[in-house]
Length: 318
Image (tube, rainbow, N blue to C red; front, side, top):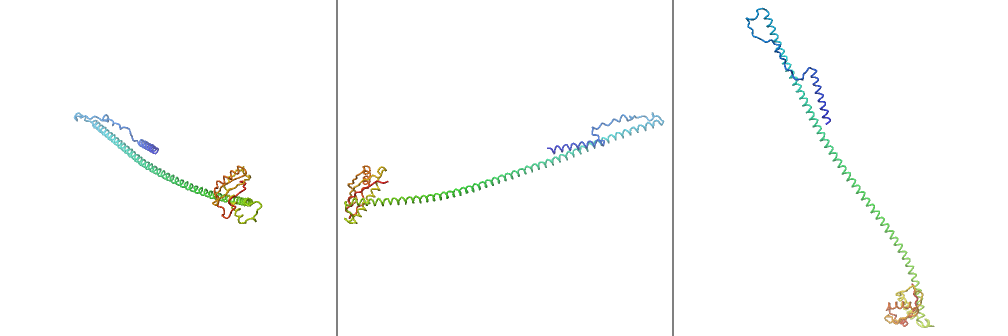
């Protein structure tokens, strides 16, 4: 728009400059004037009878004057006509020049318009190309960032999984070590308890054997009065019976330390009958329930005549 306006201003200036030049060289652009009527200056011819003309030299002078005036009028007429033709020619040339200049300006405008359109089209194509290039760059950058983000996420996930696995291994190892340590401590405690129980059982068995010996042997009699083998059989079987009763005996803390005497008879097949108890009623009831629960003991040795009736002195222990 600005270039077209500037071009119009330049053309207007050139046209005005051309008009001024034509004015300077006395070119009249105004409407051609009518040729003056020169008939006024002409001498009207009149047919004169030669017989009536003066015969002297005055007539010749008048004729010459009339001819000269007529000639001058014709010259003036020709000159006016020529000036009119020149004026028309000049006007035609000016019109032609103006038309040519207008055509040149229009052609120049058309060229400029075509160039502007091509430039605009080129700019639009360049803009579109840049936008496409920018779009591709944005998409590539987006894909790159997404791939980088995904890679980082995978690495972070892998790192966390590895860290979790290591922690799990460490925790598992710690728990195994702790479990192993605890198992060792438990084993030690269990072994110590078993040793303690074993010693207590050995003591109880020894005490039971002594009690059985005291109970089975008549008062004032010792091993010398009978077979050592029979005594040992009676002691072993008596210890077995006592161990079975204690294993099935449900002891209340209030019964601890209260001694009772349990008497049972045993059939050859091990069946218990005629069970009796003397001492603390609560302890006796508990001991008899244990005997009843057992019902049948291992059969006594056939050679043990003293194993048919067993009398035990028992004291509850927790």
